[in-house]
Length: 359
Image 1 (cartoon, rainbow, N blue to C red):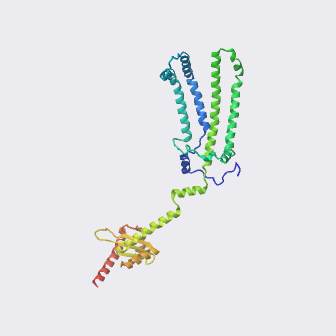
Image 2 (cartoon, rainbow, N blue to C red):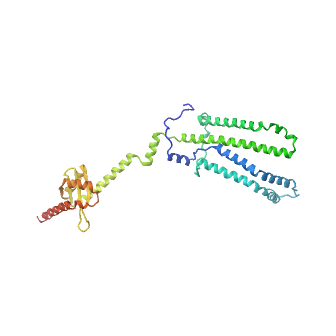
Image 3 (cartoon, one colour):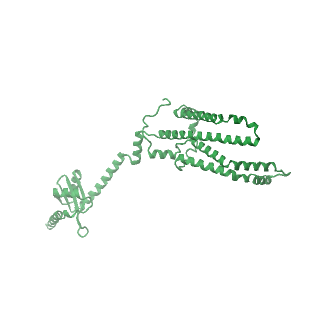
């Protein structure tokens, strides 16, 4: 397999579940160059805005340091006192710079991560990365070549930027020895800030290229095959075969419960062979007969068998049987349009039952 080979079966975009799992493991599109260049821009901006305060603070510190007289018996308490009186005063000049860098660094991280999604998996060491063979594969790969290319591009661009920044200032640099120390130091500081701005902005622009490449590469790494998507859907929705077995078991349980109600029925209506509907009715408790069992073909045959076994009357009335089967759900009362026909059948059944009892 060559370094430019790719897995042709990984052709589908990653699913939301795959992306979430990757984020939980700490695998995100991360450009270290973007974070560092952002901090560099922020640092140059902070130095330019607060640089004079910092210089004044350190100048005062140096003056106090040179004027400091060490006692004959210096101890720890004296050293602590000197630290508090000489170093603490410059902290207000440094803390704004540090705070600015911290806030911008955290903001850059949040931007790349898309929010706060902590993961501790990257904290634990992976000894597989110490394998020389695996390390060589990472180096001699498309990703390794891209990193080397980006590093070379940054080196070339920075060299060009430095050349352009210094080209117009060569004469000025050569004349610095003729100036006073204060003027030369100020000019060098101004030149240094200008060069830092050139470098920072250049690195910031290049880092965005790296950021978009990292996002592209991350999405490419997360790509899935069609089979992986099918397997994930099966895990999320359940195996169709298992779901089918569950549905069949549920139907069997419902059918058994339905058959247990047939012996309690007042009458079973039939088609005579294709349909069967069992009706139950208790005066004073029900406002109308209730369908306690119904079915076609084999289920209808089983309903008739249970009815005969328990002495439940079976009446053949094809039109009424089909109409009730199609229009009334199991466990519901029959609608008023069937009252007359069903009442007539129940009346005959009760009359026949009374006659058998008399006989």
